[in-house]
Image 1 (tube, rainbow, N blue to C red):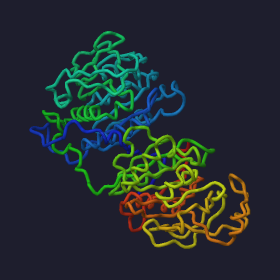
Image 2: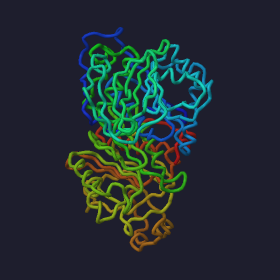
Image 3: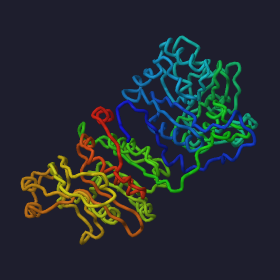
Length: 550
């Protein structure tokens, strides 16, 4: 059973952009290895957060990108993600204020920008953990973190000194050490997709530079990749990585993966993982579910798209046969964000501003649907204009909300019976108050529609007012006593599956086990994975539900 509480470690998920890039090195059987076989995964801690960078996306890019390349299990501590830039840059990570904070990990990856933290005892405490033998991987703004503190401990841990960067532009990385295990598979040169080149003022004694780049502004070369020994701990560092596109590039993820493996003794002389450090073989039967959350919308506790998608992701992350990818705060802009998807979930505002119908997104979704990708729509996401998206939603999920035809009152629906279907496994009859849409515009004769949740709206509910437009509508009032479908499923001729769920207005409703299980079962089902016999088992508490609100 997956039990969600507010203080759990999150497993981050990689956007498809990173998975879609070809890996530069195949991780074939090594010719020689450091150390013995390692059956257990490398226990890696990613510490991320601070100012000036998209750490919410980058934690996702890094963790799954590296896990796809090596036997690494992640714990993510993402802090200093709220407030203005200055406030974020002054944050001190809570975990690192605890004694022995690193004892449960094999390596720590820093993707941070805490440039205005000046607490000397805090910074020196971090450095001591690594000096005692805990390996470290330092990325980009880690080199500008803690730079104003009156201590040299962090700089000595980093191995270089930097306080400024050049203007944003791509730059060419030159491989200085093609025989080093970290750099052996790296190309002779590599042009970053985008870039922010750090000016290196000093390379400390004992550091081995592995790559450099020429700075247009300074008219000088700057070290961009290196390794060194800090006390008993190995350190890999690269200043590359300001932009998401650069971090998601195959060359970058390959490089950082090798750097991480080098720090823990898991890299062979030819730059491939030592036995036991390779990524697990790809499971061809594993289904890929892509979740997309719209941005903040209504008042606190309603239309909590980000918190809802996070709950879905957290509840499903350990389910066998399923890979879950979550995107937050709007439509993913990364190229290939939906590549390899077996199912797509949209939880966002709809209507004329529905993100799915903007630009050429509808056409791109159509190409995915034609290949049999499943689609689930939650609450407002079921609404599109009849003339833009209506026909497609009828085809893909069997129905949609249509203004002046459908209605959106807030009412307590009593679901007294449920059909036998994988989506209803483990679900008992229940009642719950929500903004349940009904009188959905379904396919003619409801072809292929399997009602999942049905209830009879009270006469008062039909009489209105509705939320917006307030109504009442004559055709809704005249249908008093008739049953209404509020959630449904379809199986398409192309092999894809669709699911519509009109509830989800109130975030607190995800605390109801039947309400929650219906949704989670449906997500597994639309991806083509096997729904557990008793349904998806995931418990949440009130603290968790409050923890991630916009």
